[in-house]
Length: 164
Image (tube, rainbow, N blue to C red; front, side):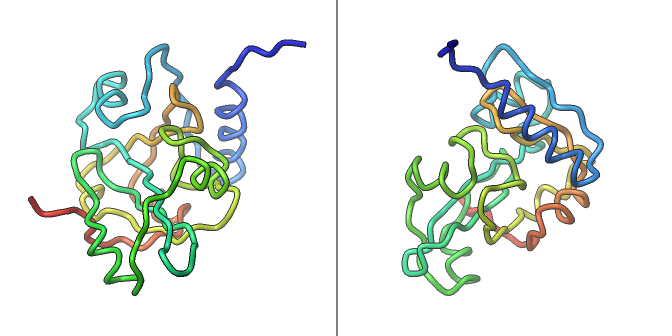
């Protein structure tokens, strides 16, 4: 039995998710990591703002997963999300992220999760024609248009970035 770890099954599974949702996008696999927004932008050769960061938080009281899809150039303002949902956020552990989404941190796609998540989408992502998001592996990404991201993730477009 082969016990070698491979990212391949996750990206194959996510390709099936894309196809099932009617999204015609080819997953791009890279030898280098695409876990962070900067790594992904460097591998793809695009602006960091085109990278969709999938950040899962946990409702402090409800214990429900909240997914924020933000531009790679932005930091999420937990206060803005708290004001929208009416409860504080707590940091999600790696185990919580995996249990909720089915994917590890750095590989979480913007949709196709194990459990439904409340999704918020950074309005700044609308500045770009093509976005790039994680495809279930820390070495895989896929392209998507902003309007398709909204439709498929069923997210709410709002201001999420922390003002510096």
